[in-house]
Length: 298
Ligand code: NAP
Image (cartoon, rainbow, N blue to C red; front, side, top):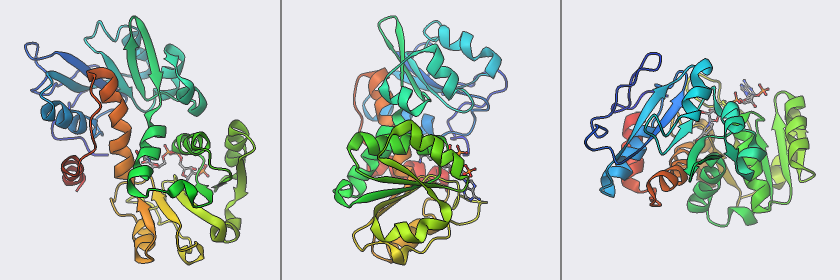
């Protein structure tokens, strides 16, 4: 990802704060902790909502190396933060240093930290981001039949857990490295069925929801090469990749008249819960916000 124009740029634990977040104006503040952390649209998203709702507060980027992460998180409020997003490489460590909810535990990674009194809790909002985006983009997606999830990396864990939580009966999980699909399937129980990559053409005709969680289709990566003609006419296709906004998979699906849910939608929806936890108001994913982030991506 490319840094937001307003995002902080930093080296080590040096933060350049957004002009909105000065000592005089800071009400509540949150941050994104990563290493490196310069590539994020999160400041753009949260500043949009802060401005829209007239909330005095801020959202900065904090570049924290692995050896400094525990200290930073243990003293998050002393550093002036009501909570934080956590990204690579800290998501698993964040789980150990906080009180995680069921979603974070099931996914095995926390991406959002917040205080509940003196207790620092954590959750994983990729689950909600993925499901909410589908609910908005393709209502009824959960009544289309089996799901087929491609990929068994970190993002796949959130997607599979979200599908299990929603009650999808059969979730086929295919990955280039079959063993990773098996490990993930074992983690989530009998409804998740590992599949070999070369069985996709057998699975597609009974797939109601196809989800790409691999990095295929991303700028600089090969496209995801599968034959969408094999999908039923009412199937829904979701892609987590959002650079480019319209991946070859999504444009092929749209060309066939299939309903789609894109990666940018998931990114925007996953930010909602963090904002609500830190600033006390549940924001909406608006067309205006989407256009703002799209312009930044382009
Ligand atoms: P990851 O943990 O590195 O997993 C990458 C996955 O892609 C693995 O399943 C890997 O298969 C597969 N893969 C990579 N190259 C491949 C190839 N040439 N052929 C077949 N499979 C290949 O990455 P991640 O964190 O899960 O992220 C995956 C994608 O989701 C990224 O594009 C990321 O930007 C996107 N994402 C989007 C959102 C959002 O909010 N929209 C959130 C999270 C992630 P192997 O196991 O065989 O290596």
